[in-house]
Length: 253
Image (cartoon, rainbow, N blue to C red; front, top):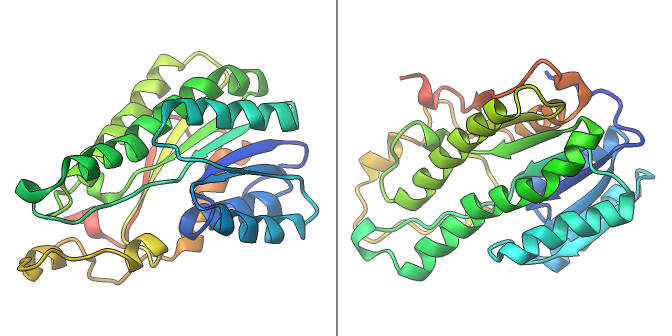
């Protein structure tokens, strides 16, 4: 299992930190010694996460905001740097998924998916890059096995995750000769709040859904968080432009 190196004296920003993978990532960063800015639209969930992090003796900045808005993304990075005086890692974990028939998808759901899953990571990275260059830091984007296999009833989600994977690689190439790293982690299905609230569209063909459900069951959230923090830490120094699949074989064939 990947092990993060010492993150004491370093600062990280984690989106989607109120629950699920974002919560687990923030906790593991704190366990490695990092100060953490936790970001999510769910203010109550952030406070619960913050309690656990502070118990570990690290500084925690709670920033509740809607990352679907560009200015909010820029502000999240600004407040983290102001609080900690530096930024060493950006972990773009926040994401949403709306299951529906493509011809019935509401414009508001499509646009929200694009805004949260793709636009927000870009704007956060755009704001964070100057600070990460100074710190010789890293970006870790959460994509999905849905970036590599078509998933029925999840067209917008698949599109955003494939685009974010390619965005990660493009940034890795652009900054190839600069002291910053860009990587992605692509999990299969995990038991998170997002998974628990998915509504299968009426009349959906369950044989199609089973095709991307995984023959070995769901992925453990902590396993993915371990990889995210490893890549965000100096221990992941040899990884640049990688997309690590943790999906129990979904994309194997």
